[in-house]
Length: 171
Length: 74
Image 1: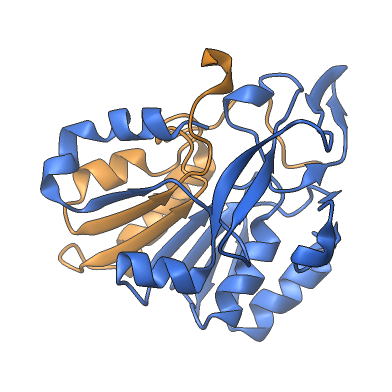
Image 2: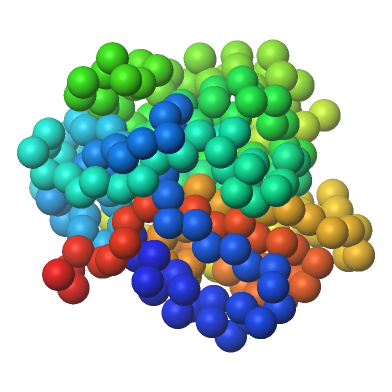
């Protein structure tokens, strides 16, 4: 949602020089990328995604309504580039909320040898796809809980399944 | 059940409280921490750790957010 508001909401402690705001999407290419807009309920204030999510209706409310023609172009960067920009090679805590792209990010993170002590992300049930997938890792995003369970277990994470999120702690 | 809330969870959501409890259990008060938040939104709405970042001066927070503006304001 709102990089400008992010800046404003942290303005009171920006003088501490410990808050670093980065107007990017993390992905597998250092190039502009499409951020798809959710035209569903409340969708425009923060539920954009790098994937075209499957339609989702809950209690007769259209919660997720994406299409390939509704997007904005944003700057994509890789984890490698992020390390260069921040001059940080290790993160203790990683919190992810990317509307269905979380699993892809965890894969990329591990591939870049980033293994935080704590990873926190939304329960991996959102499904969708990436158009023009030749530039990306996957076409159909597979957020199967079995796959992400295995990925985390193989990398020695203890998984706490909460109400709407998974909290994963490195053993 | 799908992990999707129509109303945004926030700092006082039970999941967020559990996360912060675990962070305080695992890390010492004077540990310098690098925190990466991918999809930081506006920093407050639906954000589990805004209060922790504000209060804990040992946290360096790297907040990533691609969307420039609330589209409602366009």
